[in-house]
Each structure stands twice: as structure tokens, then as C-alpha cells.
Length: 132
Image (tube, one colour):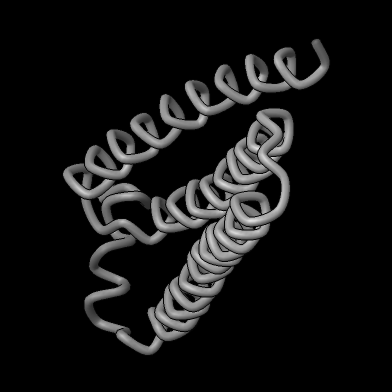
């Protein structure tokens, strides 16, 4: 019997050896939730700020430049919030129990990355429009 073959048997007969691992798993889950909540709060606060700025713009001065600035700031905040959420998903992959969960996370992170890239392109276009 090799050393690596005896490792599962060691954990099977000594469950107390797994306690530090469950503590680490719970800690990473808590960290993931905190980072996810931070990302959601960034997006929520940005949406509220964009709405307040839009209402002010609507009732005060109708300048297309101001609307582009609101959209630009809101888009950058969405990207920041998505980065927090992607970071939380990366942490979640460290606690994923199987390859199926990891595969789902890869797909979700891929979709969010494509969304971030398209938002970055729109922000760059909006930035060019506001500078012109």
C-alpha cells in the first residue's frame, strides 16, 4: 500500500483530522457571501445614485452630455460590482465539492466576464461621445 492510497483511510478512521478543513470551508463560505453582498451593494447603490441623478437631470437641464455622464458612471459601477461577484465565485470554486459545481461556476464566470467586456466597450464608446 502506497502512502497516497492510505490517506483516505486515515481520514476515514480519524474524523477529527477533518475539523480544520471544515472550519476553513465555513470561513471561505462566509468570505464568499460577504464579497457577494459587497458586489450587490455596489450595484444597488450605483443604481440608486443613477436614478437620483437622472431625476435631477430630467427636471433641471436637458443636456445629452449629462445623460451620457450618468450612463458612464453607472456602467463603471456595474462593472465594479460584477468584479466583486466574480471574485466571490472564484472563492466558491475552492469549496466546490465536485467537478459539476466547478463547471457551472466556470460557465457563470464566463457569462459575467462577457458581460463585463461588453459593458467596457459601451463605456469606452460613451467616454468618446462625452469627450467629443
